[in-house]
Amino acid sequence: MAVYKALTVAGSDSGGGAGIQADIKTFQELGVFGMSVLTALTAQNTNGVHGVFAVPPEFVAQQMEAVLSDLGTDAVKTGMLFDSSIIRTVADKLKEYKVKNYVLDPVMIAKGGAPLLLEEAVAAVKEYLLPLSTVVTPNLPEAEVLTGMKRIETIEEMKEAARILHEGGALNVVIKGGHGTGPQVTDLLYDGDTFIEITADRFDTPHTHGTGCTFAAAIAAGLAQGMSVPDAVKQAKAFITAAITHPLGIGSGHGPTNHWAYNRCEK
Ligand SMILES: Nc1ncnc2c1ncn2[C@@H]1O[C@H](COP(=O)(O)OP(=O)(O)OP(=O)(O)O)[C@@H](O)[C@H]1O
Ligand SMILES: Cc1ncc(CO)c(N)n1
Image (cartoon, rainbow, N blue to C red):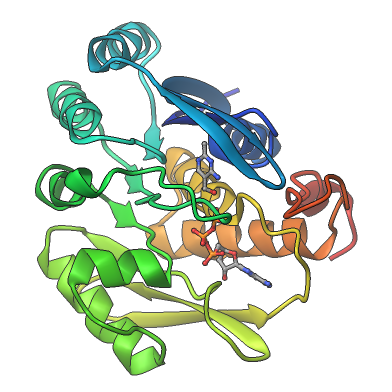
């Protein structure tokens, strides 16, 4: 049996719905061996982020070396990276170990408004990570920050943002529509040539904590198994849609999605 491996480089969510915990659960459900490099610890629950404890960049490097020099990986996903020194460290290691299949989730702000990426680090994401990425997966506010566009709401504006990020070095761009409005939620995939719109009904729920992490981890799992980018993105959309539409209903705020649903609930 072939064993496929994926590595998440991200922050820990003590509440278990986002970050490293969401990624590992997603890898497991999609049949990929999950590994993790922690960039920060958050004291977090469904009501928000109560504290952040960043890992020194030297220790982030040590974790990446430990994993990549021994186990290796078929894909890497990055999430919360917090500051520019961690970003440079991660970029150096991705290059040193010639990582293929890199999914960049440019996590910036948690649902309650807490910063998960310092402002000083935005330029480093663009300079060091975007050009290495196989797929970048910004939500609408993140796409605005990365492109400098004032407003991204319509499909035409999403297409323009995707073009800018592709020119910035990403091989493929997925602009996620979760922060939009209307009865449907559309994610837009662009490979520099063709646009693919992937649409689902918008599910009315407060339990959307960690949707972005889960979606990006699912893309990484598909790529690790040798799927094409469009197939991995479509599978990820099906995975997150199942996770959102079968809520667990736990916690008093924005609860986690249901990572079991894709494999165990009726679609
Ligand atoms: N209410 C919803 N109903 C159905 N799908 C949704 C809903 N909200 C988000 N999604 C889907 O979830 C995925 C993540 O999108 P979203 O824009 O929420 O990411 P995000 O803001 O980065 O998430 P987070 O920061 O909470 O982890 C996308 O595929 C999006 O289409
Ligand atoms: C650790 C962590 N990473 C990412 C997010 C974004 O959902 C979060 N809330 N917490």
